[in-house]
Image (cartoon, rainbow, N blue to C red; front, side, top):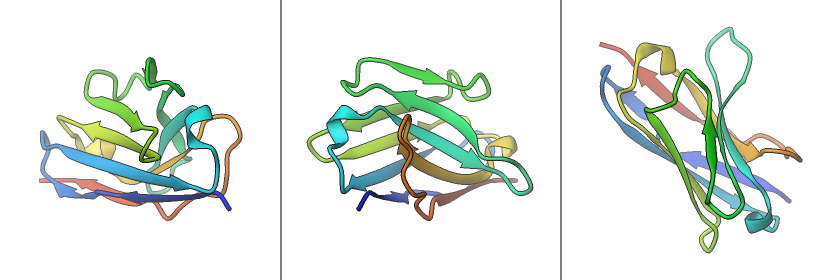
Length: 115
């Protein structure tokens, strides 16, 4: 079964950084583009960014562009989200999933940015 386990979240002050990790299993990881999503309280889940299968291209939501960086390690079946200059608006539960054929969502990892 396809499974995603997100980790690395926590509480930081504005301007701080976090690196999230997503461990994927149950499918051929290398042939799927992977995405990070987030969901803030009372809001719809939104796409944060996507990385291609070969780790040669990425795209990001305008709200995080220039601050967040997605990377992947196909050998380890891992995808990462480096988040810099975090702001209170980034507070959300962060999830990873396949970009196209979405599987069941994992538990996500909480990111809280506050003073």
